[in-house]
Image 1 (cartoon, rainbow, N blue to C red):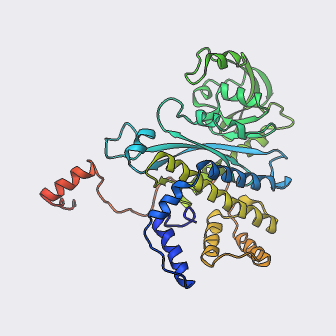
Image 2 (cartoon, rainbow, N blue to C red):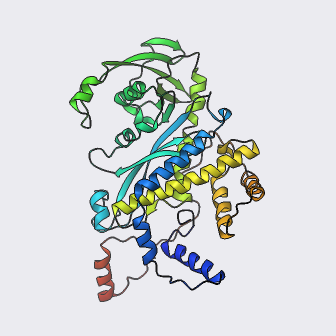
Image 3 (tube, helix red, strand yellow):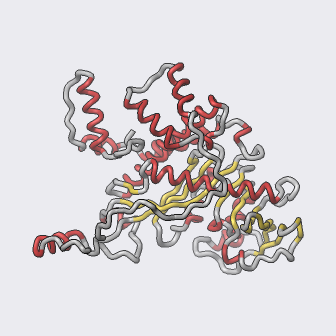
Amino acid sequence: TQALSEDGSCRAVVNAAAVRRALDGGEPLATNTSADCQARARLPMPMIATLAREAAGLVTRTAPGWWLWPVRRVRLVDGATVTLSDTPQNQATYPQPASQKAGLGFPIARLVALVCLATGAVLNAALGPCAGKGSDEQSLLRELFDSLQSGEILLGDAFYATYFLLCELVRGGVDGLFEQHGARKRSTDFRLGERLGARDHLIVLSKPKKRPDWMSPEEYAQAPATLTVRECQAGGKIMVTTLLCPKATPKSMLKVLYRQRWHVELDLRNLKTTLGMEHLRCKTPAMALKEVWVYLLAYNLIRLLMAQAALVADQIPRQLSFKHVVQMWGCVLQCGGTHDSVCIHALLVLMAQPRVGRRAGRIEPRALKRRLKSDPLLTKPRKIAQEEVREHGHPKKQR
């Protein structure tokens, strides 16, 4: 409930428990948050992560065939960043950007998530620092390879269209579809290779001569010397894929599929903005990682409700509103919940009522209309700023 509440604080959880106890006529509870924080610290992180993954598996296993893209399961991958509380422990594990002065920034972590296209459930995730060796999105994705199964399709942006990643996918029986990397996009020549159609060809890539820093010499030696991939241009984008057959997967089909990649951006937005995971409140890296998995568990439970509601309404989960279901489930919890099957069915019908508009190709400016308050930014550590206020008072408002 804490991850699903708008407040999200320990105080709100303790207050809610105290109010319920008082309304039930029980002995008054203390509203101190110490016991709640100690109880959270005792929760084993592996248990929470397992529950989150099991919830995602439950969602995906119940998905009927008509939810899937041409009967194949498609997985989305993308990365995002989250900030953490500014403590020495968090700074040591997840350093703030080097461009920020000491005392003026927040620790920042990189999150890579593997998402089911059909249901929106987060199948697995990896968290790491934003800078340093092994902190890039591909390194974090390699930690999640065990969550990919043979026959699936991995869909991602241009960060993932690299030789060694494509080789690993092919070795695992997984197909990939990515936008072509910017450096290679400029040198793509559709006159080369085996022509499949207009701006559509097969090309043989050679193994890079330089071994990446993250790769051991043994792994580099085991990588194939060449790899056949397909490049095609559609919708203004050059895509690279291991789906080589133009009859089974024509270019028009790849174009439609790649446009579905945008769903993962919205899914991460739901995690960070709708649920509030953009800033982690915990003071230590271990508790921050636990907090991430609690958010993922709450997110997947909402996706489970959406899948059940979609089945009741004969719709697909992507047509339902994530925010609407979160709000409705919050109301259910406030009312004490229910175990009555008739009431649960009625709730699922209500959850499936609003439909998310199909706005493919929608273009909006990345700008805000509402003007925010023009509060000055902190340009020096808070303790120094406090001393200056004590000595000289608050500065006059700038006009």
